[in-house]
Structure formats: C-alpha cells, structure tokens
Image (tube, rainbow, N blue to C red; front, side, top):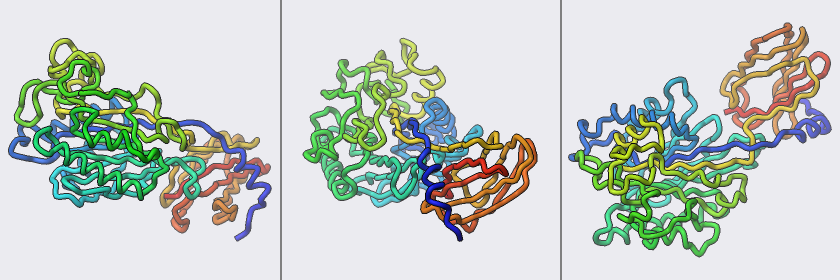
Length: 427
C-alpha cells in the first residue's frame, strides 16, 4: 500500500471545521416498568399503557441520553422498551447499553442513547449493596475521534434506598460512599453526571453531602439549580419537587401529591465549567411537568398544568409517581466534517458511521472519473476505488467488510483533481 504525501494530508486534515452540538439528557424513575409485584399489577401498571405514556414523553423531550430506574431485570423487557418507546415512528438510532446485574434486585437501572451522536465505551458496576449503581462511559462521534481525542461523558446511575425511617439514610450513605470510592480509582478528571432517584429528604442527608461536599475536587458534584434545603413537604420548594405525581393511591404509585425532591442530575466540576469539551447549558435543568402550582396535589389537579402539552402531563401522571429530570450539555465538537476544494461534486451523501457497505449518492456537475481513497489516521491508503460518473446523481456501493472498525479519512477526487475530504467511522 502506498502512503499519501504528508503535505496533502496535513493541508486537508488541518482545515477541518469546528462547531458545537447539544446533548439532551433525561433521567426517569419508570415505576416498575415491566415488573409485576403484589401492588404494581398488570391492572394498575400495565406495560402497554406505559408504552403509550413513555413514547409520548420521549417524543416531547427527544433525549440523546436516557437513563432510567425501576425497569425490569428481564432482557426482553429492556429490549421492549427500546423497540416500543424509543425506536418508533421512523426513529431507528437509539441503542441500549449492555446490561450487567450484580445486586439481588428485581428492578434495575438502564441507559439508552442516540447512536448517531454517541458510542458506548464501557459499562461497569460501582457498587452492589442493596441495588447496583451503574457507571456508563459514553463518547461523542466527533471529527477528531482518534484514540481518545473526543469528548467523553460518564453517567453514574443510582437508585438509592427509600424511606426516612430506621437506618435507611445510613444505607443511602453507604451506597454513595461505595460508589465514590469506586470512582476515585476509575477516572477522576472526567465529565461526570451522578443521576437517579436518590430518595433523600434534604440536602443535609449524609448521602447527598458525600456527593456535594466531597474533599476530592474532581469528584465533587454540583446541583445545576443550586437549591439546597429541607425539601420534604416544604412549600418553599414547590417548584422543584419531583414526587409524587399522584394525590391519591391507585395501589401502585405513591400518593400524597408533589412534596419531595427525590430525582437528580448532578454535574461534576468539569461539566459545570466546561473544562473537557462538555458543559452544562445554564438554565436547561428542568423537572418535566413541574409548574410550581401543585404542591401536595396531583399534577393533573386544578389549576391546569400548562408547563408541557396536556398529553405529556397526562402521560407523566399515568406512567410514574416521579417526574423525569432533563438538562442539556453543549459539546465543543462537531459530528461530521468535510473540506471541499473546487470540485465537480455538488453533493456527497452517505450514512456515517458505516457498517459492511458504504452506500453513497454523489451528485456531479458533469461526467467525470471519481477516484475514491480511504486512509487510516497515519495517512496510509487502505482502499482505492475508481469509477466513471455521469452528470447528476450517481449511486455507488463499496464493500468495506475487510476494513477494521475505527476512524478513517475518505478522499474523493474528480477528474480535474478537485478533492473533498471527509472523516468517517467504521463501526
């Protein structure tokens, strides 16, 4: 194989464009999704009904990262979530992180993500006392996706022990302590989100203090809305409560109305300050369906909840006794890149990342000969292809089964030596 000249490679790659993208994060306790108990049954927590509710919420929020608590440990149910709530109505880009379970619990955490923007790097368990705390490491499909030269985000998803009675606050503290000890040896200087149903009643609880007052600066977490206090049954915090959406009991959902702040997404210093290519978008943190007017009420009680479309409010009420939390992250990277010199090509279209076959539609201003090369990151040509093209649209398919997964550069050259360079990902 021949090596392209360093001058050509550097001239083209050095001109790649820079821009920003935004990731929408959604954290949600689904209330025994696909899990039947003696109190959450197929009558009062029917999965078909929940599918309609959840798909409505997903269409409204359009998350890129969707983390959940209280989904069944069944792999079939977790796949059902993907197929009936996320990849619906023409959407096909959501994927689920691989499932791992250590703790003895029927309800678990899970993560789903937009595979057009993100790739799962790894999934591990930080601790398994009472329930697993999951650590999902994702990375962005950026222009400079070269051996770690991209943006990473680590989602730590927890469902802490419930109830204020007995030693339950101490159990919550122990779960967080175990997780923080794990993270201390995992990757301190990273973009972290610590998220989930914490079941804490105030910011003075030991579990919450471990997260927000950690002596290790890199592993200290921040509340994006900076609202500490005694949240439980306190009207002063009526704008941020996340539980319960129900005032009365249906046998499954908790009752009592909106009076607790159990659900959180906390960000590490790197996320809050944007030190590592990902930054919290100020003002984007929100409990979907929280209008501040339903303290100790159901979210569908009077007055009318106008914080979201009515079908979304009704879906939130029907699906769970928790409200989902959302926030946005700006990514200082860009998904796709091309640097066009003067060429005969009007347009070059193909899906990226690529698997098995590279199917392209190339529009040409006139008949010409296309020379197509794929280069590795060292500038070595690993595939060469040449074909005659007609004026107008040309459909070209190239088998790339022999190319190993990774990041490459595609160079399109017309018959007059005009070139287009695009970064591609073989997946």
